[in-house]
Length: 186
Length: 343
Image (cartoon, rainbow over all chains, first blue to last red; front, side, top):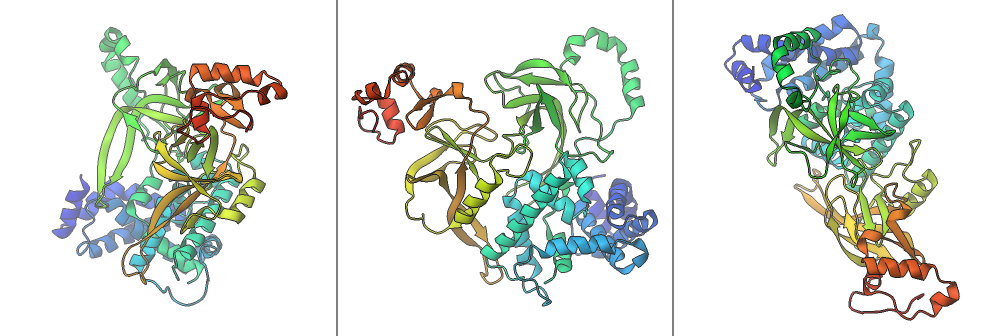
């Protein structure tokens, strides 16, 4: 079923919307959640939470042309929160590692809440990504959006692990420089 | 802000980028489907072997997690699918069938096509799947899967921003690789230039740099050739007569911080550094004192003259009082007919 029609079902408050969403994107969302939480049962919970949140978010949102990305963003958010709140998942070390890497992108890390709004930060991040070559951009996104391990990224892109690490290192430096140079205080 | 918060904020990445990063080369096709189709179409296949010989093969590997850019290896050279996703319904001129090969991470037994005049490209006929492109308004336009001739590019050229200036090749600091087993430039060289010029600079041209002209755009994935050419875009190029290791290419970019209350345009220059272009062999260039020139930029008479001139002793060269006009122009003096040799 076309995404446009699925979104229309959500707008009509038709519960078939959830079933159609699960049929079309369920496995991808579950796979995304599993990549983050590394636990089958928790991944299924995250998938189901995604449907509930999507039901509550459409309307007002109408992601007719980007339904999967809309759902995946919810799944990522839910899965990340799961990792942080459930110590039994033993994923906190990995999330800490990713957080440490992300901190290298912040020109002046501090404990003050984000100083610019999401729209401006989104602009900043997406302009940085737009300037990257496609492969580097995808590597960066696989690491910090999909939260893939270095080993998985190297396998996916047919690169050595050291190449992936250096690419990410350079991307992080470039993002920090991008934020510094363009005057973003985050 | 701390790292964990920025990690959360990565959810602000544009949906098109998220989907693009999740793309797989193809979906796995059930084996029984292939056999069933083969049985059902046996008679047709026998009758139409010449036709099917040029058809794409069964895609595979989409669900095994391998992913990555599809690539093909020919004569020990690895060609990756073009980062510009160049695909066409017609086979480009000059390319001829060279056989069938499997695409790593993509498809089985695909027809591929070579052009001896363009060894840096290979065209492969297979199914193209994409989740779509973002148009000018930011809307994602879905593109249904279709079969096409897809450009694959030598891994040393893929994503390399190049400028050819007076027969010398420059690569942008953004795209220069200094880490891999076969780097474009050494780490020491890269770091030295980075410390002096950075990747990009904003503002006016630094002292010492002069306008070389406007680089002609030679196309995506091309090896730029000519007196002043680029495979990125048409843009003004500046050079420093005292430092041939660097040229600057005019560019601009935009920012939109909360403080700016809108979009701000920034003008500046991308930094390109001299490097040994692996695609230009000595046979394609000819030397004139400290400079080398592409033979394709010179007339046959000038090439003949240069071959004669380079065979002279230094004293004999000093006695030559004129050089061909096209060689003279490549030195940057377009209006004169001759120039004293050896100067």
